[in-house]
Image (tube, rainbow, N blue to C red; front, side, top):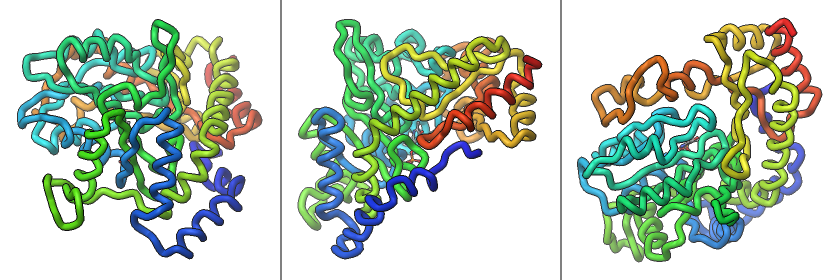
Length: 375
Ligand SMILES: *Cc1c(COP(=O)(O)O)cnc(C)c1O
Protein backbone atom coordinates (compact mmCIF):
# COMPACT_ATOMS: atom_id res chain seq x y z
CA UNK A 1 0.00 0.00 0.00
CA UNK A 2 1.12 3.55 -0.70
CA UNK A 3 0.23 7.02 0.60
CA UNK A 4 -0.29 8.07 -3.02
CA UNK A 5 -0.39 5.99 -6.21
CA UNK A 6 0.73 8.15 -9.13
CA UNK A 7 1.69 5.12 -11.22
CA UNK A 8 -1.76 3.53 -10.91
CA UNK A 9 -3.40 6.83 -11.79
CA UNK A 10 -1.16 7.26 -14.85
CA UNK A 11 -1.89 3.74 -16.10
CA UNK A 12 -5.62 4.47 -16.01
CA UNK A 13 -5.26 7.50 -18.30
CA UNK A 14 -2.14 6.42 -20.20
CA UNK A 15 -3.48 6.81 -23.77
CA UNK A 16 -4.64 10.38 -23.11
CA UNK A 17 -1.42 11.38 -21.34
CA UNK A 18 0.88 9.76 -23.88
CA UNK A 19 -0.92 11.46 -26.77
CA UNK A 20 -0.75 14.85 -25.04
CA UNK A 21 2.98 14.47 -24.38
CA UNK A 22 3.58 13.32 -27.95
CA UNK A 23 1.81 16.43 -29.23
CA UNK A 24 4.28 18.62 -27.36
CA UNK A 25 7.24 16.57 -28.60
CA UNK A 26 5.98 16.92 -32.16
CA UNK A 27 5.48 20.67 -31.84
CA UNK A 28 8.79 21.23 -30.03
CA UNK A 29 7.22 24.26 -28.33
CA UNK A 30 8.55 23.40 -24.88
CA UNK A 31 8.24 26.75 -23.13
CA UNK A 32 5.08 28.81 -23.57
CA UNK A 33 3.08 28.24 -26.73
CA UNK A 34 -0.42 26.97 -27.45
CA UNK A 35 -0.50 24.02 -25.04
CA UNK A 36 0.26 26.20 -22.01
CA UNK A 37 -2.26 28.77 -23.20
CA UNK A 38 -4.96 26.16 -23.76
CA UNK A 39 -4.45 24.71 -20.29
CA UNK A 40 -4.65 28.19 -18.73
CA UNK A 41 -7.94 28.79 -20.55
CA UNK A 42 -9.39 25.47 -19.43
CA UNK A 43 -8.29 26.09 -15.85
CA UNK A 44 -9.84 29.54 -15.96
CA UNK A 45 -13.16 28.00 -17.03
CA UNK A 46 -12.87 25.41 -14.26
CA UNK A 47 -12.22 28.15 -11.70
CA UNK A 48 -15.33 30.05 -12.73
CA UNK A 49 -13.77 32.47 -15.19
CA UNK A 50 -11.04 34.17 -13.17
CA UNK A 51 -7.70 35.09 -14.77
CA UNK A 52 -5.07 32.35 -14.59
CA UNK A 53 -1.34 33.03 -14.62
CA UNK A 54 0.81 29.91 -14.76
CA UNK A 55 4.20 29.70 -13.07
CA UNK A 56 6.93 27.25 -12.08
CA UNK A 57 5.63 25.95 -8.74
CA UNK A 58 3.35 26.75 -5.82
CA UNK A 59 6.06 28.43 -3.75
CA UNK A 60 6.79 30.81 -6.65
CA UNK A 61 3.07 31.50 -6.94
CA UNK A 62 3.03 32.69 -3.31
CA UNK A 63 6.14 34.80 -3.83
CA UNK A 64 4.79 36.32 -7.06
CA UNK A 65 1.49 37.12 -5.34
CA UNK A 66 3.28 39.00 -2.57
CA UNK A 67 5.55 40.77 -5.09
CA UNK A 68 2.49 41.97 -6.99
CA UNK A 69 0.98 43.67 -3.94
CA UNK A 70 1.84 47.09 -2.75
CA UNK A 71 3.95 46.03 0.25
CA UNK A 72 6.98 47.55 1.95
CA UNK A 73 9.79 45.96 3.92
CA UNK A 74 8.65 45.36 7.48
CA UNK A 75 4.96 45.11 6.60
CA UNK A 76 3.29 42.23 8.38
CA UNK A 77 1.57 39.29 6.73
CA UNK A 78 -0.55 36.88 8.76
CA UNK A 79 -0.07 33.12 8.25
CA UNK A 80 -1.24 30.08 10.19
CA UNK A 81 1.44 28.57 12.46
CA UNK A 82 0.39 25.03 11.52
CA UNK A 83 1.04 24.68 7.79
CA UNK A 84 3.58 23.90 5.10
CA UNK A 85 6.55 26.26 5.22
CA UNK A 86 6.13 27.85 1.76
CA UNK A 87 3.88 30.79 2.64
CA UNK A 88 6.00 31.98 5.57
CA UNK A 89 9.12 31.46 3.47
CA UNK A 90 7.86 33.67 0.64
CA UNK A 91 6.91 36.38 3.15
CA UNK A 92 10.34 36.30 4.80
CA UNK A 93 12.31 36.22 1.54
CA UNK A 94 10.64 39.48 0.50
CA UNK A 95 11.66 41.23 3.73
CA UNK A 96 8.12 41.13 5.07
CA UNK A 97 7.30 39.91 8.56
CA UNK A 98 5.35 36.70 9.05
CA UNK A 99 2.87 36.87 11.91
CA UNK A 100 1.95 33.36 12.96
CA UNK A 101 -1.56 32.79 14.21
CA UNK A 102 -3.15 29.75 15.78
CA UNK A 103 -5.54 27.37 14.04
CA UNK A 104 -8.86 25.72 14.80
CA UNK A 105 -7.96 22.16 15.87
CA UNK A 106 -11.19 20.89 14.32
CA UNK A 107 -10.37 22.04 10.78
CA UNK A 108 -6.59 22.62 11.12
CA UNK A 109 -7.16 26.05 9.53
CA UNK A 110 -6.72 29.60 10.74
CA UNK A 111 -9.96 31.43 11.49
CA UNK A 112 -11.09 35.06 11.74
CA UNK A 113 -10.74 34.80 15.53
CA UNK A 114 -7.14 33.56 15.45
CA UNK A 115 -6.36 36.06 12.67
CA UNK A 116 -7.72 38.94 14.74
CA UNK A 117 -5.08 38.28 17.39
CA UNK A 118 -2.39 38.82 14.77
CA UNK A 119 -3.55 42.26 13.63
CA UNK A 120 -1.35 45.30 14.17
CA UNK A 121 -1.05 48.69 12.45
CA UNK A 122 1.60 47.10 10.22
CA UNK A 123 -0.62 44.25 8.98
CA UNK A 124 -1.08 44.48 5.21
CA UNK A 125 -2.03 40.99 4.09
CA UNK A 126 -3.19 37.59 5.23
CA UNK A 127 -2.52 34.16 3.73
CA UNK A 128 -5.28 31.72 4.63
CA UNK A 129 -4.10 28.20 3.78
CA UNK A 130 -6.85 25.74 2.85
CA UNK A 131 -5.04 22.89 4.56
CA UNK A 132 -5.58 19.24 3.63
CA UNK A 133 -8.22 20.18 1.04
CA UNK A 134 -10.75 22.07 3.15
CA UNK A 135 -11.56 25.75 2.77
CA UNK A 136 -10.88 28.08 5.66
CA UNK A 137 -14.04 29.70 6.99
CA UNK A 138 -13.61 32.54 4.51
CA UNK A 139 -16.65 34.77 5.05
CA UNK A 140 -15.50 36.16 8.43
CA UNK A 141 -11.87 36.21 7.24
CA UNK A 142 -12.80 38.27 4.16
CA UNK A 143 -14.94 40.54 6.32
CA UNK A 144 -12.10 41.16 8.81
CA UNK A 145 -9.66 41.72 5.93
CA UNK A 146 -12.04 44.30 4.42
CA UNK A 147 -12.41 46.12 7.73
CA UNK A 148 -8.62 46.41 8.02
CA UNK A 149 -7.88 46.98 4.35
CA UNK A 150 -5.82 43.82 3.98
CA UNK A 151 -4.94 41.86 0.87
CA UNK A 152 -6.02 38.22 0.98
CA UNK A 153 -3.72 35.70 -0.71
CA UNK A 154 -5.26 32.23 -0.61
CA UNK A 155 -2.86 29.30 -0.50
CA UNK A 156 -4.94 26.80 -2.45
CA UNK A 157 -2.10 24.32 -3.10
CA UNK A 158 -3.95 21.52 -1.31
CA UNK A 159 -7.52 22.39 -2.18
CA UNK A 160 -8.04 22.82 -5.91
CA UNK A 161 -11.68 21.99 -6.66
CA UNK A 162 -12.79 22.58 -3.06
CA UNK A 163 -15.72 24.88 -2.39
CA UNK A 164 -16.76 27.28 0.32
CA UNK A 165 -20.40 27.93 1.14
CA UNK A 166 -21.28 31.47 2.27
CA UNK A 167 -24.05 32.17 4.77
CA UNK A 168 -26.39 33.28 1.96
CA UNK A 169 -25.99 29.85 0.36
CA UNK A 170 -23.74 30.99 -2.48
CA UNK A 171 -20.76 28.80 -3.25
CA UNK A 172 -17.24 29.78 -4.38
CA UNK A 173 -14.24 27.74 -5.39
CA UNK A 174 -11.29 28.07 -3.05
CA UNK A 175 -8.57 30.21 -4.60
CA UNK A 176 -11.08 32.63 -6.15
CA UNK A 177 -12.28 34.50 -3.05
CA UNK A 178 -9.28 36.62 -2.15
CA UNK A 179 -7.18 39.23 -3.94
CA UNK A 180 -5.04 36.45 -5.42
CA UNK A 181 -5.20 32.65 -5.17
CA UNK A 182 -2.12 30.44 -5.46
CA UNK A 183 -1.84 26.80 -6.31
CA UNK A 184 0.76 24.07 -6.85
CA UNK A 185 0.81 21.27 -9.40
CA UNK A 186 3.39 19.20 -7.50
CA UNK A 187 2.78 15.56 -8.58
CA UNK A 188 0.98 14.46 -5.41
CA UNK A 189 -1.39 17.45 -5.27
CA UNK A 190 -5.04 16.93 -6.23
CA UNK A 191 -4.20 18.35 -9.66
CA UNK A 192 -0.58 17.36 -10.13
CA UNK A 193 1.75 17.29 -13.11
CA UNK A 194 4.84 15.13 -13.72
CA UNK A 195 7.33 17.65 -12.42
CA UNK A 196 6.87 21.11 -10.93
CA UNK A 197 4.17 23.62 -11.75
CA UNK A 198 1.99 26.31 -10.23
CA UNK A 199 -0.62 28.95 -10.99
CA UNK A 200 -2.19 32.15 -9.72
CA UNK A 201 -5.83 33.18 -9.84
CA UNK A 202 -7.32 36.66 -9.73
CA UNK A 203 -10.49 38.41 -10.85
CA UNK A 204 -8.55 41.65 -11.44
CA UNK A 205 -7.37 42.06 -15.02
CA UNK A 206 -4.59 44.51 -14.12
CA UNK A 207 -3.37 42.28 -11.32
CA UNK A 208 -3.24 39.36 -13.75
CA UNK A 209 -1.13 41.44 -16.14
CA UNK A 210 1.20 42.43 -13.32
CA UNK A 211 1.58 38.81 -12.18
CA UNK A 212 2.26 37.71 -15.76
CA UNK A 213 4.99 40.34 -16.06
CA UNK A 214 6.54 39.49 -12.70
CA UNK A 215 6.75 35.81 -13.67
CA UNK A 216 8.49 36.78 -16.90
CA UNK A 217 11.39 39.05 -15.85
CA UNK A 218 9.06 42.00 -15.37
CA UNK A 219 8.69 42.48 -19.11
CA UNK A 220 5.60 43.80 -20.84
CA UNK A 221 7.12 43.21 -24.24
CA UNK A 222 10.29 41.35 -25.07
CA UNK A 223 13.44 42.99 -23.67
CA UNK A 224 11.53 45.92 -22.12
CA UNK A 225 11.59 45.42 -18.36
CA UNK A 226 9.11 47.55 -16.44
CA UNK A 227 9.40 45.66 -13.14
CA UNK A 228 12.02 43.60 -11.34
CA UNK A 229 10.55 40.18 -11.81
CA UNK A 230 11.80 36.64 -11.92
CA UNK A 231 11.75 33.65 -14.22
CA UNK A 232 8.92 31.35 -13.26
CA UNK A 233 7.23 29.37 -16.00
CA UNK A 234 5.08 26.30 -16.40
CA UNK A 235 6.52 24.29 -19.29
CA UNK A 236 4.46 22.79 -22.10
CA UNK A 237 4.99 19.13 -21.14
CA UNK A 238 3.58 19.84 -17.68
CA UNK A 239 0.71 21.88 -19.15
CA UNK A 240 -0.13 18.98 -21.49
CA UNK A 241 -0.31 16.55 -18.58
CA UNK A 242 -2.35 19.02 -16.52
CA UNK A 243 -4.81 19.66 -19.34
CA UNK A 244 -5.59 15.92 -19.42
CA UNK A 245 -5.80 15.59 -15.64
CA UNK A 246 -7.97 18.70 -15.29
CA UNK A 247 -10.65 16.84 -17.26
CA UNK A 248 -10.57 14.18 -14.52
CA UNK A 249 -10.22 16.51 -11.53
CA UNK A 250 -13.84 16.41 -10.35
CA UNK A 251 -13.91 12.64 -10.66
CA UNK A 252 -10.58 12.43 -8.78
CA UNK A 253 -11.86 14.68 -6.00
CA UNK A 254 -15.04 12.60 -5.82
CA UNK A 255 -12.91 9.46 -5.42
CA UNK A 256 -11.05 11.13 -2.54
CA UNK A 257 -14.34 12.16 -0.96
CA UNK A 258 -15.71 8.62 -1.20
CA UNK A 259 -12.54 7.22 0.35
CA UNK A 260 -12.83 9.79 3.16
CA UNK A 261 -16.47 8.86 3.75
CA UNK A 262 -15.45 5.21 4.00
CA UNK A 263 -12.74 6.00 6.54
CA UNK A 264 -15.18 8.17 8.51
CA UNK A 265 -17.78 5.43 8.57
CA UNK A 266 -15.33 2.90 9.97
CA UNK A 267 -13.21 5.05 12.24
CA UNK A 268 -15.60 7.54 13.79
CA UNK A 269 -16.63 5.27 16.65
CA UNK A 270 -13.05 4.64 17.75
CA UNK A 271 -12.38 6.66 20.91
CA UNK A 272 -8.63 6.87 20.37
CA UNK A 273 -8.86 8.93 17.20
CA UNK A 274 -10.80 11.94 15.87
CA UNK A 275 -11.82 11.92 12.22
CA UNK A 276 -11.47 15.11 10.15
CA UNK A 277 -14.49 17.41 10.27
CA UNK A 278 -16.05 18.75 7.08
CA UNK A 279 -17.56 22.08 8.02
CA UNK A 280 -16.90 24.80 5.45
CA UNK A 281 -18.21 23.40 2.17
CA UNK A 282 -16.83 20.78 -0.17
CA UNK A 283 -13.65 19.24 1.26
CA UNK A 284 -11.42 17.58 -1.38
CA UNK A 285 -9.25 15.56 1.03
CA UNK A 286 -5.78 16.24 -0.24
CA UNK A 287 -5.02 14.46 3.02
CA UNK A 288 -7.23 12.39 5.26
CA UNK A 289 -5.85 13.44 8.62
CA UNK A 290 -6.77 11.97 11.98
CA UNK A 291 -5.95 13.36 15.37
CA UNK A 292 -4.69 10.59 17.63
CA UNK A 293 -5.62 11.17 21.25
CA UNK A 294 -3.67 10.75 24.46
CA UNK A 295 -0.21 11.19 22.95
CA UNK A 296 -0.39 7.84 21.17
CA UNK A 297 0.21 9.13 17.63
CA UNK A 298 3.77 7.90 17.28
CA UNK A 299 3.07 4.44 18.73
CA UNK A 300 0.08 4.03 16.45
CA UNK A 301 2.19 5.15 13.52
CA UNK A 302 4.92 2.57 14.30
CA UNK A 303 2.31 -0.15 14.78
CA UNK A 304 0.76 0.60 11.38
CA UNK A 305 4.21 0.68 9.74
CA UNK A 306 4.95 -2.78 11.20
CA UNK A 307 1.74 -3.97 9.58
CA UNK A 308 2.66 -2.58 6.18
CA UNK A 309 0.49 0.52 6.35
CA UNK A 310 2.18 3.79 5.44
CA UNK A 311 1.15 7.01 7.17
CA UNK A 312 2.59 10.50 7.25
CA UNK A 313 2.79 13.32 9.76
CA UNK A 314 1.89 16.60 8.09
CA UNK A 315 3.34 18.59 9.83
CA UNK A 316 5.49 17.53 12.79
CA UNK A 317 6.67 21.06 13.70
CA UNK A 318 4.65 24.26 13.66
CA UNK A 319 6.36 27.23 11.99
CA UNK A 320 7.46 28.90 15.20
CA UNK A 321 9.37 25.78 16.19
CA UNK A 322 11.33 25.65 12.94
CA UNK A 323 14.97 26.58 13.24
CA UNK A 324 14.78 28.85 10.16
CA UNK A 325 12.09 30.97 11.78
CA UNK A 326 13.82 31.37 15.12
CA UNK A 327 13.73 35.09 15.86
CA UNK A 328 11.78 35.77 12.66
CA UNK A 329 8.33 37.20 12.69
CA UNK A 330 5.87 37.41 15.49
CA UNK A 331 3.80 34.82 17.28
CA UNK A 332 0.22 35.98 17.80
CA UNK A 333 -0.97 33.44 20.32
CA UNK A 334 0.05 32.17 23.66
CA UNK A 335 2.27 29.12 23.56
CA UNK A 336 1.14 26.45 25.91
CA UNK A 337 0.54 22.74 25.93
CA UNK A 338 -2.93 23.74 24.79
CA UNK A 339 -2.25 25.91 21.75
CA UNK A 340 -3.87 24.25 18.77
CA UNK A 341 -0.88 24.53 16.41
CA UNK A 342 1.38 22.56 18.78
CA UNK A 343 -1.44 20.15 19.62
CA UNK A 344 -2.09 19.44 15.92
CA UNK A 345 1.61 18.95 15.22
CA UNK A 346 1.78 16.44 18.06
CA UNK A 347 -1.37 14.50 17.23
CA UNK A 348 -2.00 14.50 13.45
CA UNK A 349 -1.67 11.36 11.37
CA UNK A 350 -2.49 11.24 7.65
CA UNK A 351 -3.69 7.92 6.25
CA UNK A 352 -3.22 6.62 2.69
CA UNK A 353 -5.39 8.80 0.42
CA UNK A 354 -5.35 8.84 -3.36
CA UNK A 355 -7.57 8.43 -6.38
CA UNK A 356 -6.92 4.71 -6.84
CA UNK A 357 -7.50 3.66 -3.22
CA UNK A 358 -9.85 0.65 -2.96
CA UNK A 359 -12.19 -0.36 -0.11
CA UNK A 360 -9.97 -3.45 0.29
CA UNK A 361 -6.93 -1.24 0.97
CA UNK A 362 -9.00 0.84 3.33
CA UNK A 363 -10.26 -2.25 5.18
CA UNK A 364 -6.63 -3.17 5.91
CA UNK A 365 -5.99 0.30 7.32
CA UNK A 366 -9.16 0.26 9.38
CA UNK A 367 -8.64 -3.21 10.83
CA UNK A 368 -5.03 -2.44 11.76
CA UNK A 369 -6.21 0.68 13.61
CA UNK A 370 -8.95 -1.32 15.35
CA UNK A 371 -6.41 -3.99 16.35
CA UNK A 372 -4.14 -1.32 17.78
CA UNK A 373 -6.96 -0.15 20.05
CA UNK A 374 -7.91 -3.77 20.90
CA UNK A 375 -11.33 -3.45 19.30
C1 LIG B 1 2.72 22.05 -1.92
C2 LIG B 1 2.42 23.29 -1.18
C3 LIG B 1 3.03 24.52 -1.50
C4 LIG B 1 4.20 24.65 -2.42
O1 LIG B 1 4.06 24.13 -3.67
P1 LIG B 1 5.35 23.72 -4.53
O2 LIG B 1 4.79 23.54 -5.88
O3 LIG B 1 5.90 22.48 -3.93
O4 LIG B 1 6.31 24.85 -4.46
C5 LIG B 1 2.62 25.65 -0.83
N1 LIG B 1 1.68 25.60 0.12
C6 LIG B 1 1.09 24.45 0.47
C7 LIG B 1 0.03 24.47 1.53
C8 LIG B 1 1.44 23.25 -0.15
O5 LIG B 1 0.85 22.11 0.23
